[in-house]
Length: 188
Image (cartoon, rainbow, N blue to C red; front, side, top):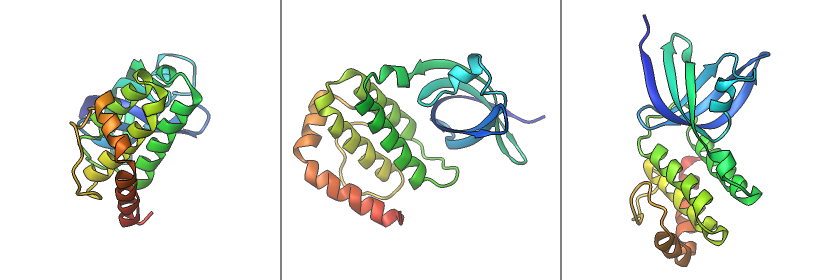
């Protein structure tokens, strides 16, 4: 009998497989970045809602010979609906895309889940004029977790307060230089 892993996860991406299945890319606190096959996810129902892009859900994963399979999911928070304007959704897509490009396989990158959750909170709760600073902060935190940046990063892993983001916005040029250096170091 295979072991079942129950964890919280944020769905970063989905790609269709066959008529009703999809591969989902999940960011979890315990397992890091996981790619799993979700069967019958494209049929209407609870599983489809729980595995929508940017959904934060409680999931059950099973590790098999050919990779991870998702055997259940219950929606916790739908961040896509919380991000009410197109600009916030584009920022979320850019950050998710960067993460997926930086991490090609599975990665036990602890700390990214809380950072991404904090980023989604910032995009949904804080004024739009500070969203660029939130995007800069999450990018530099991702690079640091992946070992591609060694500089000081203000605040805790999931902290995206208004005062912290104002501080990041004031030092924007320095952070953008560090982000570009980290991306160059990754080979992208």
